[in-house]
Image (cartoon, rainbow, N blue to C red):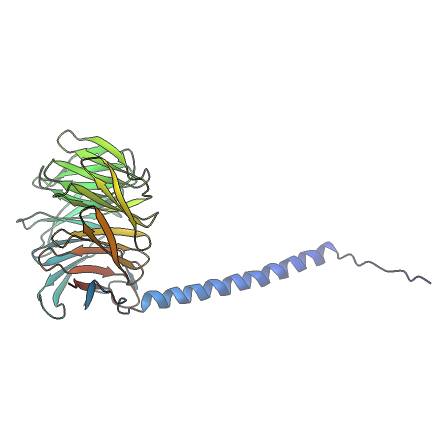
Length: 364
């Protein structure tokens, strides 16, 4: 005898309730996972430990910087007469670090100038008490006295003012404006813009070639470097940086005629010959590099990236080799080299804790 089997068919309302319960269950899991990731990220950013050991560098200690906000991230650095200037991207302040000791643990006197808008690049004019800082949030370049940090004036510029340098050949200030894809040229005596130069792509960091009177400019979205002539106000050359993806920081070796560009998208540094107009070498470096600095006397290249790795490279003629990948701190992406002491200064971002500069010296 066969029994009749009844098949259950849920109603539309029951189906909706089941789907809702499943969505809520998975939504809860996603929220919990997100909270766990957030907690780990907060702990990672707020805990500031010493960098990893290295065979090529000695960690000498930290210089503590002002804690303006809960989160502090710093951008470009400038160095002159044993004094470092660095801009706080979030609070808008410019921090002055007067270095006072060459031996033992690093000592410094720290002062600060507040300002509106995001502080990015800082340009110093040699032998003059005048400096310039880009403020992208306000679309201005502030002019201030390095000695006192007193504000001298403001210069309106195009949107997204980022990197800035002083060009000794033309005696002009060069500003890279990212989103508008142009450069603004400023007369530092008259404190006003002279002209803008279309670049045709988004500029990152530039470098001044005093010997040939050119500015070399990284172009992020086209993976190129451009040569800009300030006398004619035009781009006079563009070359590929392949295999570089997303060029950011740039440094110039005027003696050997080479550019060093770090590539955030491909985590590389490429060596570009100014004579051959092509990349002649490339190496992998720490994750998402954003800045590069040279010690010409010691033949070393230093890079730093937002994933918290400082890479040390040694050059010998045409050969390059990585000496160390030093693990530092997330968003420790800006560094500078003191050519006199050969010390390397690296800014640390900080969440909840105080930001700081890590100080390294090269080992023999």
